[in-house]
Image 1 (tube, rainbow, N blue to C red):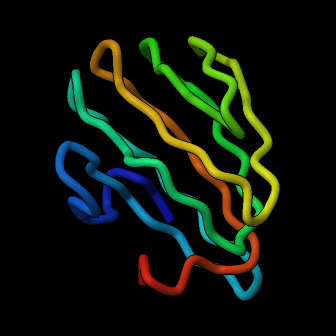
Image 2 (tube, helix red, strand yellow):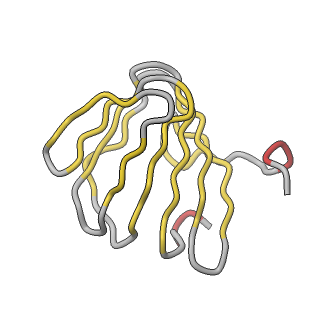
Length: 103
């Protein structure tokens, strides 16, 4: 498959994702609008986020840091987290197991 051929879905305001699902994981390639926020939440999926472009403010379990190109964050299951795009961003998220609500 090729990312150019995968349609983008706006999963939440300002978060446009190209989604790939396998048997055991979901991969999302996000294009995020400047200022777009993900509210504080948690889920049962393990998650790894990588910043591909831009600056992204991310709070994990109460600790806030600024992440830039090639930075990665491992988010354990059921751990509260939130984020905000400080610039337009490209992010990649990997979830295990599959993020069924993103299908």
